[in-house]
Length: 231
Image 1 (cartoon, rainbow, N blue to C red):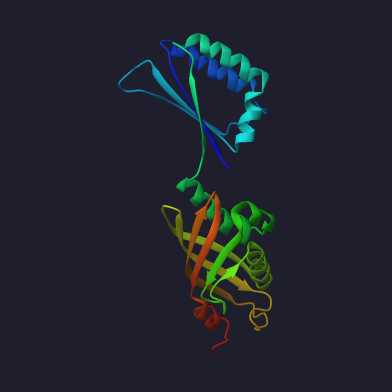
Image 2: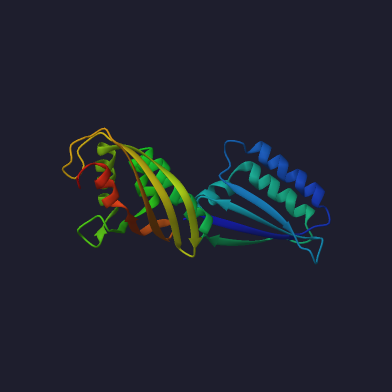
C-alpha cells in the first residue's frame, strides 16, 4: 500500500532549507525510495511550511529513513526550524489519478503488451468480472482474466485506442475502440485474416489500490458480423 509522510515545520530560513533538500536529493541518487515530494507554504503564515513525501510503501519509507544522508540532513533541518518538525504518517486509501493510471496500464501494458505477470499487481486476487459476451453473469478470480487474455491474444493481433476516461470515486470508466487482425481460432471461427473494429465500455472499480470488479460492454455482435459468422 502506498504511503505518504507529511512533515510540518516553521522556519525563517527556507532558502537554506531548500538548498539542504537539494543536497539530500543529490547525495541519495540511486538509494532513496521516495517517489514524489512537494512543499507548500502557508498563505497566512510565511514561516509555516508543509512537505508531503510519497513512497511506494511504509517499508520503503522506513528504508529511506535509515539512509545515512537522511539522518544527517534531518539533523541539519531541525537546526533551521523554529522547534522540532512534526510528522504525520498516512496510508493512501484512495487516489483517483492512480486508479486511472492502473486502468490504462491494463489496456496498454497487459492486454496489448502481453505482460500478463502484471495482472497480480493491478487486479485483486478475487477480482469479479462481468461481461455481456460470457454465459456466466459473474466470473471470480484474476486467473480467469489471464485465460481470457491468452485466448484473445492467440486469436487476434490487436490494439486499444482509449477514446475517453472518466474517474469518479472508486470507479474508472473507459470508452475504447479495439482494432484487431483475426489470426487464430475465435469462438469456433477459423482465422480469416480480416481486420476488425469493435467499440466498447469498461468500468473498473478499485479497492485498496487494485481493480476489484469490472463490467464489460462491447459490440461483440458487430465483431462476429465482421468475421462473417452472421452471414
